[in-house]
Amino acid sequence: MSVDGRQVRDWIALMHAAPESPEHQRLFPVYDEVCVLVEERPDEAWEFILAVLASDDSTPILETLSAGPLEDLLVQHGTRVIERVEAQARRDPRFAGLLGGVWRNTMPEEVWQRVLQVRDRHGWDEV
Image 1 (cartoon, rainbow, N blue to C red):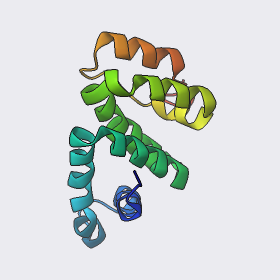
Image 2: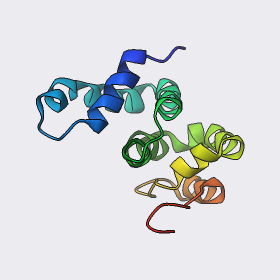
Image 3: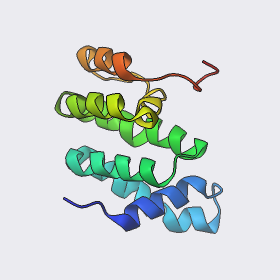
C-alpha cells in the first residue's frame, strides 16, 4: 500500500491556506478525500497520517492532524488500529505528541484509556 503524495501535499497546503482564499477553495476537495479515506480505508488513512507528520510537523498541521484524521481514525476504527498507534507512540516522540491533541470524542473507553497511556500532552493547552 502506498501513500498518495498528492493527497499529502494538498492536505498540508489546505491546512496552511487562508480560509476562503482561492487556494483554500481549490484545495478543499482533498478534505473530503481524506474523510473518505478515514471512513473506508483505515490502513491507508494510517499511512496518510504518518506521511503528513513526516512531511510537516508545524503547529497548524499538528493541531489539525491530531483533532482531525487521527482522532477520527481512533473514533471509527480504534480497536483495529490501537496496537499500531501504541507502538508508533512508543518509538516516535513526535507521534506521542500528536496524540496529545486527540480528544476522546466518541472513542470506545478501552481505546481511549490506551491512548491516555501513550500520548504526550506537553505543549497542548499550556500543559
